[in-house]
Length: 455
Image (cartoon, rainbow, N blue to C red; front, side):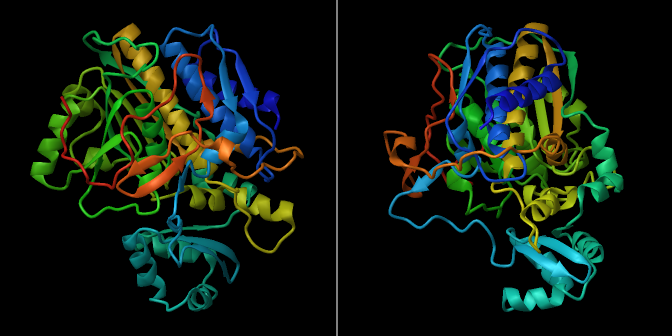
């Protein structure tokens, strides 16, 4: 673990967000060991928590108070914060998801969602085993198969080197973008809210239109600061491998935005929201009649923060994507392969792009709330997994002692009971005196609640 590198990374993140030279809280990094990777994943994880902590301290006007991050716990939270008790953990991947050799390289297929798996099968046919699927993939050239699956509505990424990615039109577009694309919106009425010392987001309503990891990680953290988070999913959407991990502290409802009734309900919910966090593809909400200007009209002063996979310009801006696919496309998996001197892709040991993006999204929400309170304007910010990857790839890991596995001292003292069963949650890595990160609601299945704000 390199505290100096964690500090530089965190300061780069927060300066990219704020663009000014106002005082920063002191950072203290504790914990030994590091995740094994060519890239400094443990330092990156600690920096993500630190950036969120610094944004929080500025919102609280407490920049004189230091922020402490347990780097070992930060690394563990970048994998999973929850350990089921007397139950088998949910499988993380569909049986056909994974890396496959092609006629000219490697490709990753992402098939966790049923419709993404069906799209892959529409191109390659249904397979009875992974071995049979691999035989079908082997006859394709990697970029031709990538394009065919994407055009069918699926998710895939050919493995490229970093040099190849930078020469690709999408890699070139991402390279020109700042980490945060953000701006103040129209002047709005004063926000009748001030952060309390121990529950800084108490009274803030957050509408959560995110899925999988990055966005849900952001809103989970914000819920732990006291925010009222209402997550909306379409009918039929499930995340059985992730719901217990990321719905902590939230209420979860369903709204069909493709129907007039669903859009009317969404409009009413948005009108009462202080914050919206969304992870739809670039133009998805616009196509439904809710572009950024319309969202501000419905909720003047709205803090509006969003994420996509591939960036906000370039030919892939509307392409479906996930952390593992971005790692394949941008050169991370290829660099890992070279580092390990093996014949197959070597991705990061955790979904670090997703988790880091989650805490950067949360930092953007906190900065947006500060501007909303102090400057009486709305706020709009966008990030992408591909740009987060570019930040990580600027740095290389040095040799460290290995990260030790989870032990009983890492767990919170009280067990967690929910509809999923009994479990234990890891202690939170971010420590600020007098301000615990704590959740008032246990995790719950998607669609468990009504689509309304609680009184």
